[in-house]
Image 1: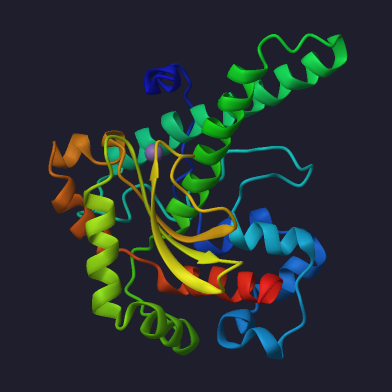
Image 2 (image 1 turned 30 degrees about the vertical axis):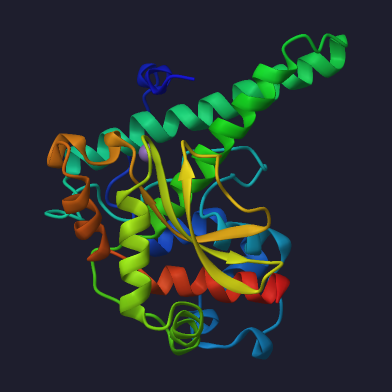
Length: 268
Ligand code: MN3
């Protein structure tokens, strides 16, 4: 599977949308809106009612599907140039409008082909189609988390997330060192991820090769850095280390904390 497959597709980024608009987009009107009050960030999993399944999904995978349940390219939660100088507007626009859009298109095509196979009973392409569904699907979902992992402002982990980080990584500094090292050493194209392990009930740093390989099962990504060359090459050339360092300045701990609280509510 060659990444250049995605080069054909283009989609317009939508700069100028606020973070709040972005979050609202993925939420269903009723239960989701209540979560936007800001209260969800400040409260513990035990003290708030569980959000609806739709709201939970859109908090964990922001903007991944539209109100009809169709896969969709979410708008960026900030203008394309808002993360400069750490990530410039040209890189963001190309990455979002071309590459991420290509994953959405590939995922839809794979699922349509699988539906056709079920209808016709011809499963001769099942291996290729299943692999494509995994590749493009994982690519789509991780990019949704990637955009939401960053923000132009500064932030720090909430008290409950900080406690979990200290418990599972000894300190925020140790977490940062492990996360940076994981991201910098991904072999080829892939991701550095902070995840919540549902079975182990703890935070785990993982790499993903391409988008879909090397995960544990049962891990929900909370923070994602894309280290495919298309994420940084225009600005940093082969300087992945410098790009990873720049990303560390952009981490949106509010969003990470929101996903942490949501998954804890969903699965302890
Ligand atoms: Mn990418």
